[in-house]
Image (cartoon, rainbow, N blue to C red):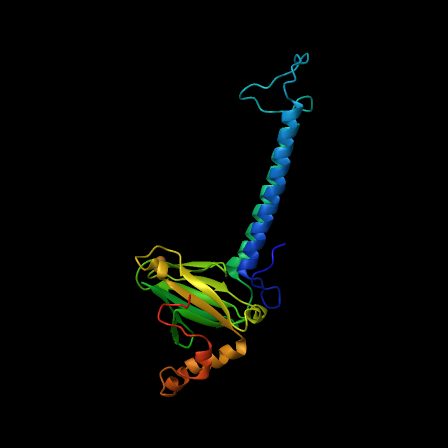
Length: 263
Ligand code: CUA
C-alpha cells in the first residue's frame, strides 16, 4: 500500500498529501479491477461468439446497427441494465467518497485556534511571507511542526501560483485577491528528516522570464525551536532585534537569501 508521505499529529489529522495519495490509489485500484473485468468479459465473448463456420442457429436474432444490446436468450435488456446499474453504483460511490474526503482537504483539520496564519505575497520573482507579529521573511517560510499553518496567498504584481508538490498544496496568487490554503507537517516527519523538514516551493503560473527561477522553501522545525525563533522576530524594530538576527537560533535554521533557496 501507499506509505504516507507526511503524517499528521494526533486526533485524526491527515496531510493533504496522504489524502490525495489515497484517492489516487482507490481510483487506480478500482479502475484496474473494472478494466480487467471488462476486457476479460469482452475477450470471452469474442471467443464464445466467434465465427466457427457453422450455419446460424434457427431463429437466431442477430443484432442490427442501432439496436440496443439486450442480451440473447435472457429477459430483455437484463445485461444492459445490469452493466448500467453496476457502473452507476461504482461511479456514484466514487463521487460521494471523493467529495467527502475533499471537503476535509478544503476545510482542514480542527486546530482549536492553535493555527498560525501567514500571508504569502508573490512578486516577480520570489515569495515574501508575513507572520502574525508583522515579521517578514523572503524565500524561506519557517514554521513549527504539528501545527496547522494557514496561508493567505496574494501577489503584488502579476498572477503567480504558490505551490509545493511534496505537500500537495497549490494556490493562485492574484493581485488584489487573497486565496487561502493550509498544510501541516508532523514532528515525526521533521525527526525523520533530521530535525528540519524542508519542502521546495515553486511558482506554477507562467509570470515572466524569471518564472522558472521563482523558487522558495518551506522549512518545518520542532515547535520549541520555532517558538524561540519566533520570539526573536518580534523584536525586529527594536535595537536588540539586530543582535538576535545574527544569533544562533536563526543561523541554525538555514540561510535564506532573497528569493533564492539552496538547490
Ligand atoms: Cu511567478 Cu511564475
